[in-house]
Image 1 (cartoon, helix red, strand yellow):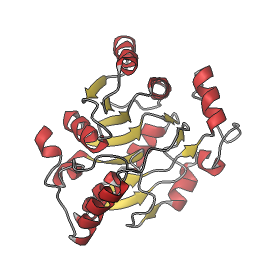
Image 2 (cartoon, one colour):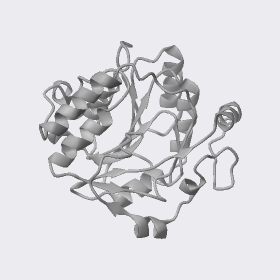
Image 3 (cartoon, helix red, strand yellow):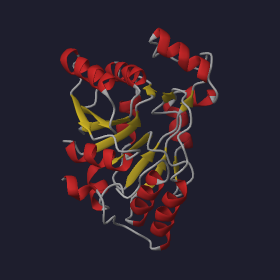
Image 4 (tube, helix red, strand yellow):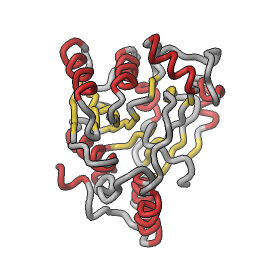
Length: 261
């Protein structure tokens, strides 16, 4: 099965560089890497251009004008550009375990989307990783806050795999789905601007349309570089959009990916 790995980013070129280097070490390479860029400046463009020239990765730069936090639109544009049947979403500050892509494809199943977990790095360890250009972490590494999430085990992953529909812990920093399932609900809701709830509202419509949740542990491991929290200034209005989708049992967004297809 062919896969598009989509990376969301905004003005964090140093972190994106480490993420791209971790993708180069995958045991199974994605067929394409699409960078969903929410308006980054020249530093990010330079990193991407360099990789496009020197790396074996098939990299597509999907850029939109910087007009505030518009990650829903950015993801829609990237998914619309994708050429493959399966989509893996990550953020531009997630360093990937070498078997990340392979694990996602091993667990792909029609009728399901996958929600993965992450390992949290401390501020100090993140600073060291960026300084040393380090992309290698393990259970024994310093500066890890939730150490059990570093364990890679196919046995434990199968044993603790959970198929249950709920909204707690929804994060598009480690999520995978079939592209057609995304198109069937018209993708992410472009009405979301500012941080928060665009991922949960997307999942509400997936669930309402019969696509179930598969919660993945001890596979598809990623290491999250520390950063300051995004402003919650738009959270109230985004909560309203989210709750409206819940109350109306929504399966479709009227302002979604179709405008980019």
